Image 1 (cartoon, one colour):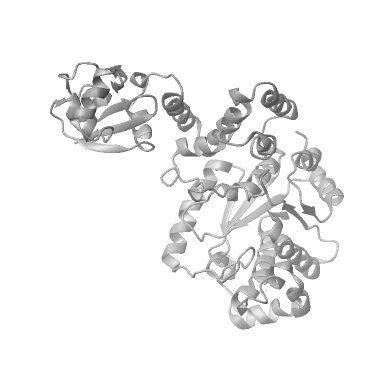
Image 2: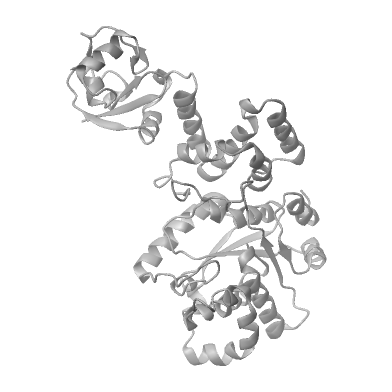
Length: 420
């Protein structure tokens, strides 16, 4: 897509909430490549899908030929952004902050690649200030009445806000100015709650570099589901980008379970599919909703983007085994390991074990008597093979490189034995 159309694309995708000067931004991007920046504070050791919201917009600017710059806020993260918060953030140690910065930086490289993409840490410049420099060079640029009027501050005045968090908007403005000088950043992106902080940065650049200095801001709307709840909030907690916290299978399932009413919005926001492709998928939900074609494509696209092709294939295969008709015997050992991360597991020795003892050990029946009934009725499958003989001995080392035994009762009860 041509550079001058990136804002139009964002509009039809429903990805723009507010922007400062769209005509001026398009005119500038038509002349030169600019830096486009998003900030993230490393208050945790992994990003979650809520963080993807501004990053999907940033990725579209990258695809349109612009240069993405991400500030992982080692300095601001130690202060705490009051945006969207009802109380003060818990302070983290420098060691924990540094670990979080390293982990998030690796996740960001997976999304944006290593070429044509810059990660910076604002500790590199904010950490150099002393208090008098900060007050003299920047404090005078920010009238208190203007700062108090910002939504992010006004919403906290009744509950209380510390001077530390009150100054956060100044630090974020300094970040914008530093990146304006260092990385040719001309546009800052953020969530809708960042509008006041972003415009503060635009104002600072105009004060220091001249009123005609090119600096722009754009915010992304709060993403709500059709039931009015905030996107990304689940009963099980956050959906993480770290595969150790949320497996690619669980990640895939999250998107696969998108409601029909929400799938068009999610396809527009979280995939790079064309308008024609999305329209076709949305139409399929009206003509054959049970096939969930749109949800499958959504899950496929986002899982590939975040976790890569191999993780996607594993998630799809495990899904087909658990909820479709795929034969577990076709799983690789690595795929069984993925399956084991999403069903009950138990430990089993390497010596042959009777089928009844195995079913009880797997927790699929409470007694050998009940296990006998299940086996006799043909309800038990071991590594995909139906077992009806109650005298059968199972060799735990017979499949999956001798590491796993898959036990299934009926259509939905699973357990994976880990061979010790």
